[in-house]
Figure: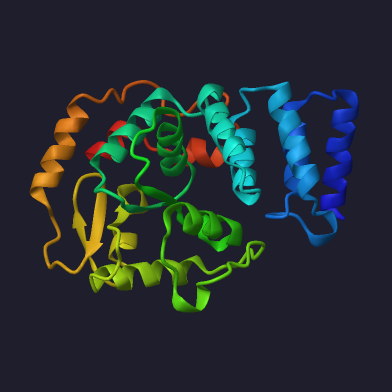
Amino acid sequence: AYLGGLKRCYGEALRLDPCQSFAHEVVASLYNPQFAHMELQSDDSTVTHLEQAVRCDARNGSAWMSLWVQSLRHEDGAAERRALEGLRTSGILTPSWLAHGRWVLRTLPPRAIVLAAGDIDTYPPAVVQSAEGLRPDVALVNTSMLNIGYVVEHLVRRYGLALPPDLSGDVPRDTLDFNADRIIAFWRTEAAAGRLDRPLVVLHSMGIDYATAGAGTPMLSGPHWVIGASAAMLDTAAVAAAYRLADATDLSGPFVSPQDRSPVRASAAFSPALMLGY
């Protein structure tokens, strides 16, 4: 009843203003199979309302974020690039966070699997990867999205990432409870044993408690830890190199965009410069 009431409320908003971008975004989320109750789910309606949201207001960055996720669902590379470009030009990702994303990417070891926490440590490097062709060799993994089958399928297809034996083969792409913890635990175990064919990296934004929770030793190597079998926990040469790169990185300016409607991002975001110092 509550969701039905929301649908009617925002439906009325669209009747009064058919090009109200935020209303289209909310209605899209009510239909989105990732969030919606079974009786309201509609993939086509989700995409239609998200497309209308960015058509009415190209600065609606959160709608571009949702369109990026939908592009993974539909295995549409052109739509993925378009969504990331729309996200870049929307202004929701400030220049300081994009600069931070470039800095993080440049410090990563070749072909790394990079574990990120959420929006602010996933989207800036993803946009830079797509728009500037920087470090296409690394696999950015938003850990909260590893519970979605089609996201896992996308990572396996694009980067050839290994999965636990019981999850290998055909990925159930519409599964919304794919068990991210099991996948990450498998990667950590393989990395600790030297069997993972890519470096496994935990971004600093994930926190030291996450970096130390599981198999393998986290070695601080800049704005990330590399999970491995070494007893050492600090790579001084890599940290020094990361700081040298930071010297040429402009992290000044606002770190929350004025048009970002998310109270979560506004309240939880750290300044990129503070992240570097931390």
